[in-house]
Image 1 (cartoon, rainbow, N blue to C red):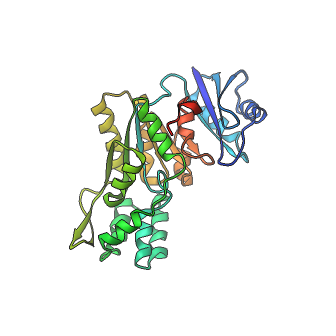
Image 2: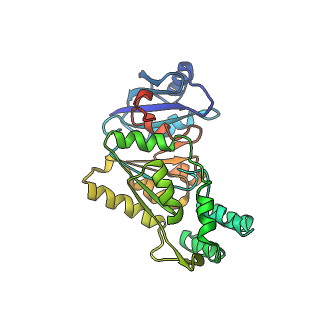
Image 3: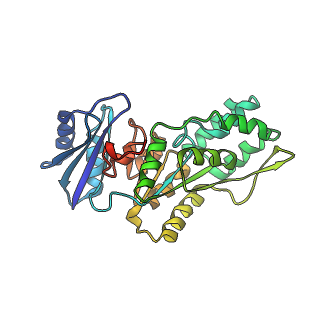
Length: 294
């Protein structure tokens, strides 16, 4: 089987050929060829292997202590036609529910629950309902003010815009809330969104999440449904997320990537990005820097 290992430098770091060669040799790739996608930033290494899972594990282990990432996959089908992405702490730099909690002075109380839920220590739906109940009374005016301050993760817009420019479909699939997903999706350029809906009366939250709750199974189902609707093969799909509620979605994808993720998620995903920004997912598909969309 012909595989490609895409090495991408962490933010602010530089990638050198010697480090790549050393990682490949430590990872068991005896013979390989290199192709630079962006000078000092991203490089493809092509090699043969009969065991994708083992090759991934060995190359990942070879990066211990390094400031760059590697994504290992079959060469065939590496450029994807569907992107499904989590929002909070993935496409944006915030956890929106924690930001909402800050409006009413209970950020510390809620962020502890968020952290445990994302680490897989709590049932996602139960934890979500518990946190939203504490937000009763937050107004739409406050939410709109907060949404305007949301910051995009570096590389988020480049990832979506480049993939869409080359014919891919992009969906924002999140356990977050529509008052945030809609403006975020518009800023980044997603085609479609899947998110939770909050009950609102007299322009204020009641503390209730409307059914059905968009959680772990909902995310997986969204990916599977989009794949079927678009008539795509399993291998043509890419998913990215950081929390335990993303795990089933990542496993459902042709390539599931854990982005700056919790340990449990990073260990279970097909690939992990710990150092680079979201443009690593373009390089992993073989995009060259000049193919990025400004």
